Length: 152
View (spheres, rainbow, N blue to C red):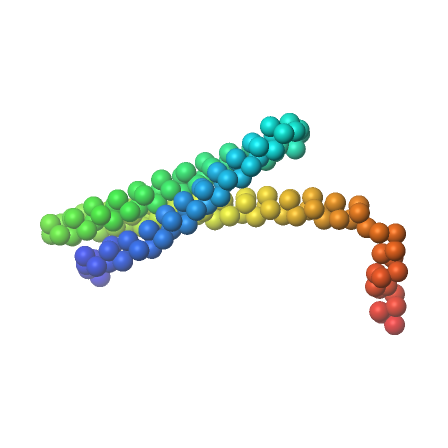
């Protein structure tokens, strides 16, 4: 299969959308950090915040690397198109492969970041569930379904 000029050009829209998504993730993390900083200034409880800071730093590093590999992939696509324009097909093929590998690395890092953010959100939900369990009314046992009655 021969690489044509339109092939790397197709990646432009995909990479641009990925970069937009990565930037939105970065902005969301920045908002979380600013909110965490405000809450720390109001009541500095180091035990709770230290784990969140570690999580946010790791996610920031991952997002930075996602963006880095995404931009590198984008640049390699431009180089590939230039090489194709100049008629250097063999070099363009290798640059295109490097661009695809860079995009793949960016997506893999994105997958890891999604896993970390999901884990963090589940921890937050767990905290709220614990709080809800502690605040149950003394009449909740009346309205709670009894599993023994349902089985018969």
